[in-house]
Image (cartoon, rainbow, N blue to C red; front, side, top):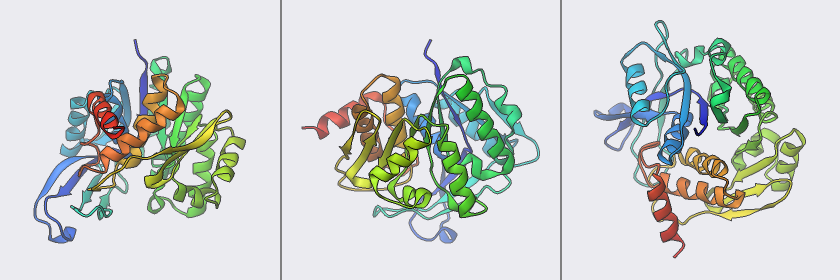
Length: 316
């Protein structure tokens, strides 16, 4: 039996504007699902892997909607708990047609997910887990969620589970920039693989020099450093290899949200399928390119057949 990919995070009900313009003037929204870790969970299941999602939802209509959507996407929900006091987070997103970043509005402060505790982590059976994927979002939500994140990392490490980490910086969620940098880099020290963007590295360690970034993370114990460099692709640095894996040509960018999560999907599934690191990053670049051609945060994430077709056509 294949082991699961475990994710922890905050799924939100996503309301996508059906017309362009400022959010306060939009009258009709389409309901969907948002959250970096949700995007990754959906992406890996579409590629044939098994995902387990740990979160806390509000005992409200949006909370039950989210659980139902996760189940529709074949994501395991055994580690989901419901909170009768705190509510499910909500996100509004504007409609864009020119490839610019959409305007978003969040209603998540004090949400049910921000009240995740270490007790929920203790329910995990690590013998079923083959890979843990963590982002920098849960530790930004609250002190208890931060403690739970570190407890999860410690148990995963103790149980020899491979850990991938996407910093996914959200400065507005943190109490200070200094705390964000300190906590994110502390989390990185637990990871086997880190997937930062180049601009994130500038914030986290003060440089955009690829070799300096790799050296920093190797020194704190990260084996594989993969730096996203936008449309150019991604740069790999391990103890055995380094180099740029070029990105895919995208003629029309619709929405950039979720591209980094799609990239993570490609890399971690490639690793689990024993692809080379170059092939895994190539897959990540392809999924990121597919995602920016779609409006939703995750609806464009491909099946294996769709991914193979895209990569084959691009190589012609």
